[in-house]
Length: 228
Image 1 (cartoon, helix red, strand yellow):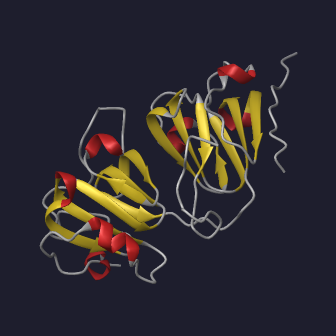
Image 2 (image 1 turned 45 degrees about the vertical axis):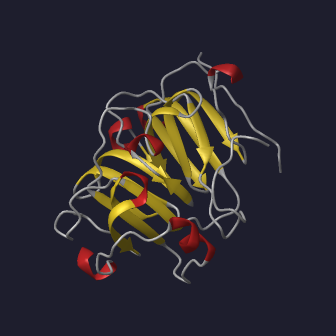
């Protein structure tokens, strides 16, 4: 009989309508000091290091090119979190973006497979509590690892060395990674059930680290920090 692995950390529209007009480069430091009252806001710059034309986004956009953005060179997240996608229509590789600066493409991904972003949507974080269960096989079968109110940089370090084919999110919003140390492809998990790996955007059932997504409602800085 197969046994479950258990780890519990007891630390108890139209996209155009969301854009402003493109402007010349604006200083990201000054904009961070005076964020707008909007719940979600990010600035897209067409060149690296916050140079070139700037586009302000406050809601979902399924096709950046149709909205007049030629290329995403750098990103400044003022209020978030957000998720960007490699393809239009919120498809393809995912990039989770929390409050902060992303001066070039390798600041929002380390998979190094693509430097393109063609769509964005905000991510709603509506719970301070977090609980996620990841299963070896589809339809929530086989061994599992259960995580409560903690970030886990390595499943292997906690005795779970299986594949991840299905996931249940009971509370909170999470981002999982293909490899330990929060590396590789990213997979966004919001509250709900994912019966097989294709439902969370993975071509292969491989997840080896996971962390909670931060939000300014629950965390003052609104972003993830590796140090305690």
